[in-house]
Image 1: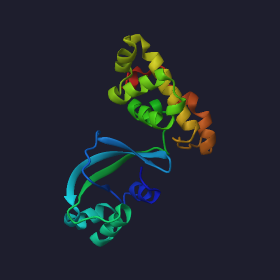
Image 2 (image 1 turned 135 degrees about the horizontal axis):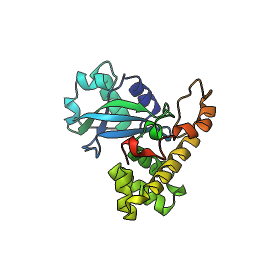
Image 3 (image 1 turned 90 degrees about the vertical axis):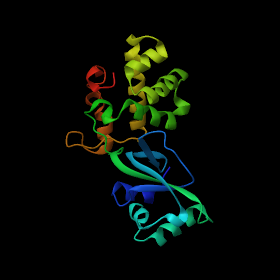
Image 4 (image 1 turned 90 degrees about the horizontal axis):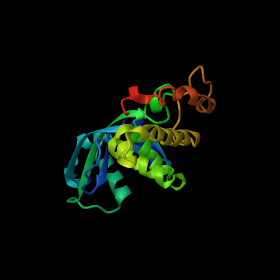
Length: 215
């Protein structure tokens, strides 16, 4: 979870990294950034490295959106309390690849990967999902493939339609809850109206999603 002020800087490319106390090794090359109780963007991890507090310099200040290293150190002390010069920090350089408040309705799965939808749904819809839905979505976080998930969960490649329906339901619920937002277009009008009116076209290629690349 990232504070809203940090996220705004990241979306404007004023901030290009996040610095965390301790040693962290990200599981994925691409991450979903959360703020204010919802997912806000996808970002590619460009580089991960480690430095002691006393080793942080002007470069780290710049990519964190500060004018000098003193400003960066002051903020780290404010966030983490008392820190020592020899404390290690993880510097994760990021590049925002997709905003999650500007999804494109006409694309398969609104331009998201099945694994993205699955991760977000498992985080925000956990109490509403059936055990089967959770199993399917968890498998998708690992395979990012409808075909592979059908085999893993059902032992039957012909169950791809079931996997797609679960994925579609999860995405529709996320949009209806405004956890994800579809970009308004001239044909859909205001954003709220567009969210309700674009499901027919937004999923025009989902039911026959062999061409989507995730079948």
